[in-house]
Length: 169
Figure (tube, rainbow, N blue to C red):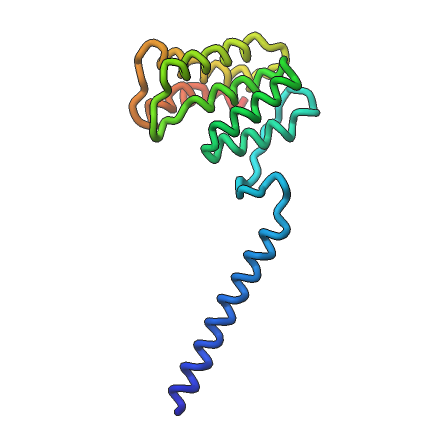
């Protein structure tokens, strides 16, 4: 009888922890903000664009970091439609065509990304850091256009790695 009581008590304690976890999860979902309904988390980058586009840019950045490429592209396009001189929005849009973990960009994707890079480099609102980001994606786009397709994540990251020492300045 004693072992049954111990088992029952342990079982009830374990059951109560499970119920508490389910209740916590439901509460977190109930309080999720509109911007995090997909569980994207938060992404933020200081940008030199109109303050009116900052939240839209951060949302598109979060989508990009979560591999929602099509929706990220739409978000970056919204930013550039509102502020056409926002250079970093073109960087973000160009980055949506780079899927290093599963498929290489098509020729049409490469042309689209390169066109976005060119628009970004021609834009007026660009900090020195944003120019570095655009130059790095330009280097990646050039590698792809010249059919020097990077192989693996290390090769894809090379344009970024070459610029890393300048980010700390």
